[in-house]
Image 1 (cartoon, rainbow, N blue to C red):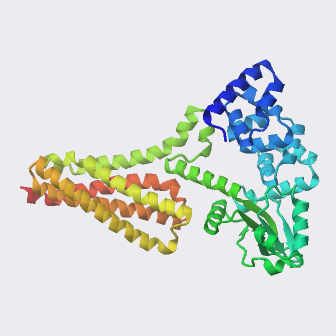
Image 2: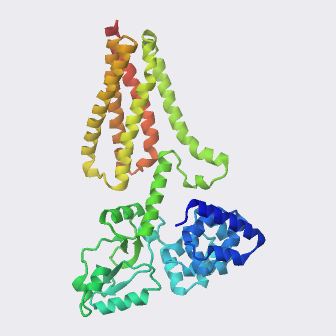
Image 3: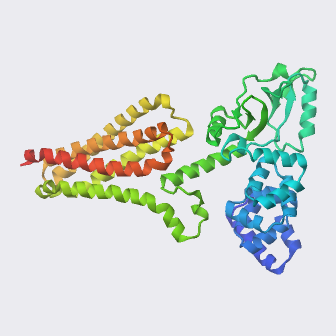
Length: 453
C-alpha cells in the first residue's frame, strides 16, 4: 500500500511525463500498481490527463481501475470513451460491476455495448438491470460455483477448476438439486478434507443463509455482519440460486448507507450535492431543513414573549436559558444517535425498544441529577440564591429527562411509520427540545416565583 507522499510524488511525475507525452515512462511507473492506487492517482489529475492515462491501460486493468474510481472521475472517463473501448472494458468485468457501468451509460451507447460483448455476459447484465439498484438482485454477481447435490468431491473440484477464470474469488461451493433450488453450501475447507468419492450432500451445510433478490441492500449487509459471511447466495422467490453477493460489495453497501445516514442527519437529502457545483442548487437542497429549525425558533421566541412577565420579575432567569437549552439538546442528540445507530446496524430491534427507552430514562436521570447539583452549587455561590438554584437544578433534571426520552422515542416512531429515522430525527429533536425545554423551564419558574420572594 502506498503512502500519501508516494501518491503525490507519482502524480507530479505523471503530470510532467504527460505533458511530454512520454508513454513508455508512464507505463513503467503505473505497471504493477494496484487498481485502487491507480484510481487515486487518476482522481488527482485534471480531466485531460486522467483520460490520457486511462487510455494507456489495457482492458483488464482498465476494468479494475474504473470500478475503484469515485463517481466524478468515472463519469469523466466514461464520457471520453467510445463504444468499442467501453465494450472491451465491460467484457472484462464481473457481472455486477458491468451492470453498474452499463446502467450509467446513455441508452443508445449502452445498447451498442451490450451488442458487442459476449452474448452470455450481455444476457446476465440485462437480467441484473431488471432488479432495483438498492436490492440484493441489484448488487449481486452472476459468477459463482454450484454443483448438484449428487456430485462427488472430485466433480466439485473439477467444477471449481472449470470456473476458476470466470469466478475471481471462490469462498463456497453452492449445492443445488435437479431444479436448481439451493439446498446447501460446502466450505472449501470441508471440500479439501473430504474423501474424493464422497458426495457433496454428505458434507454440505443444509441450513443455508440466503437472501431473495428483492431484499434491501442494507438488510443484506446486516445479515452478512450477523452471520460473519464472506459471501451470501441470492435466490428468487421460489428458491432458485441466481447469484451471490461477496464481502467487498457488502463493505461498499455499508459505506454507502453510513454516508447516506450522515448526510440525512445533517439535513442533506440529496446525495448528488457532493458532485454539485452550483451554489444555488446546493442552497436549495439545504435551505428547507434550515427553515424547519427557523420555524422552531420562532415558536421559541413566542414562548419567551409569553413568559415576558416572569423574565422581568427574575432577570437572572434569562442568564440560564442557554445552559438549560444546551444541556437538553445535547442529551436529546445523544439518545437519538444511539437509537438511530442501533436500529441501522440491527443491534436494536423492535422487541427490545421498551428496554432501551427505560435505560435511556435512567441514564438521563442520573446525568440530570449530577448536572443539577452542579448548577445548584453555581447559583448558590454566585448569585447567593439557594432557592432559585434549587428550582433551576430541578428544572434542568426535567429538561434532560424530557429531551432524552424524546430523543430516544422519535426514531422509534419514525421507524414504525416507515420513515427513515436518519432523515427526520435531527430537525425533530432540535426543534422539539427547544420548544418543550423552554415551556418546562419558564413554566416551572413561573409557578415557583411566589416562593422566591
